[in-house]
Image (tube, rainbow, N blue to C red; front, side, top):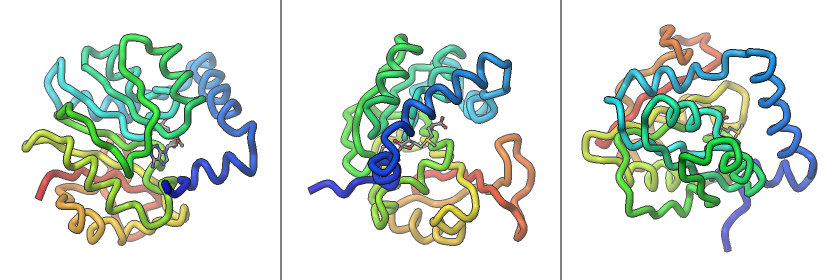
Length: 196
Ligand SMILES: C[S@@+](CC[C@H](N)C(=O)[O-])C[C@H]1O[C@@H](n2cnc3c(N)ncnc32)[C@H](O)[C@@H]1O
């Protein structure tokens, strides 16, 4: 049986969480907050019209912006309420309910993005499988960009070994989505990975 993700476990304890999350980002967008930092980086890494996987897409904040910038986006997320919101707000893209630990798509992607701490919300112990499954749907030259914060139950120094076990390697590390250097005191990691 599929192991519930940490995101789902938190949601079971707090049933209003997903609606709260959707509303929170809608309110920030309405107030003019800059919610496109991750999408800007991904957009700069690939040619126009690229195929992009938004892994753990939530309500489609990142993938929706990438579609608006002319890419072909498929989003996958385990939370049906968030996927419904993505479908309503960004109908030009494909939004699928699914666990990344079971990801099995025929599509191949030029780049995959895992923004918003997704890797810290997968089911404990499935990190390698999630990375492996995403790696499997990348083109040979494809890349995966992962961003997550410190103190969320998945230490930065676990990523190199987990990536290696998943057939990926870390090419670059930054501390922000606008590419500030990563160092010992960094509170956030943006890692660019490719197939080993
Ligand atoms: C904080 S939200 C980030 C959403 C989106 N990436 C963003 O940045 O706006 C974390 C998301 O990860 C998703 N998630 C966590 N584990 C997952 C898994 N194993 N498979 C698919 N989605 C997962 C959750 O459902 C949730 O939507």
